Length: 207
Image (cartoon, rainbow, N blue to C red):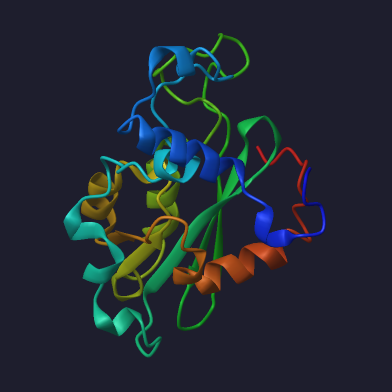
């Protein structure tokens, strides 16, 4: 307010918060906490809360463990996958083969009880892309392919594939997870999803 023309005199709210927390050795004194809108004594940036480790992504299934042959697209059978999300927790699974760009769309129908019973915290996801429904649908899609065309699948960090060990056992397809917030590690799939949005625009019920 005092120096409207001088950009060097501007400061972000985050910088103010951080300086206050450093002063209080990471935690604010009670009288200061009372002044905060959130009432939280410790500062936790949103990015840090989003980056909390997911239990289903263990050291053996991170992208760096994926076979090198998957990277150069010379050998077919390496897939990238994700979801296209619609309204009311509906979705379509998309699988793209890295070498040929061949695309499979996986139908994720509502599960029995959807819309009839109120949602239960930590209960089964009935919308269509909970871990159980996802595994079932992906297994059906992949097992239609010859064995040599189902080597690996690279997915993002979504919990819908938390049952990947069972999926790998049933299909012979080893699952690997991209790093958090790194869509460029699944470039073929990201590009394909962008093209598919022409046919499945946002705001559509995809069930």
